[in-house]
Length: 155
Image (tube, rainbow, N blue to C red):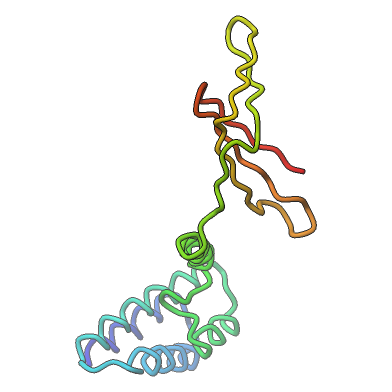
């Protein structure tokens, strides 16, 4: 288990208290070895988690918060750093399961061309999406097939 010694050594470069190093390293090893079949996988997860925790310490996170994140398994892909990415993926997955309702002919294009003529086409595709807070109206996104104009509005 030479990788554990290297993990302790790496933690020792940024932490001075031996007790803190020992506690954090032990918790990282415990969480890394959970649900892993082979020693190679344990080592890989351990090294990635050590790297992530060292980054957290260098970013000024409190040791108490780091230990809590380890305790509740907010490491690796569950780390708060990836929260925004996870939200984007969840939104994309939700869109795949429940796509927007696209309507044609509900709106009329009021865009003007170079000569000042109004397009007037009813071949306008539109969909609505909640962009702002829930108490605000949904935003409608529209696109004219004839002239290619795109616009959006709320209300």
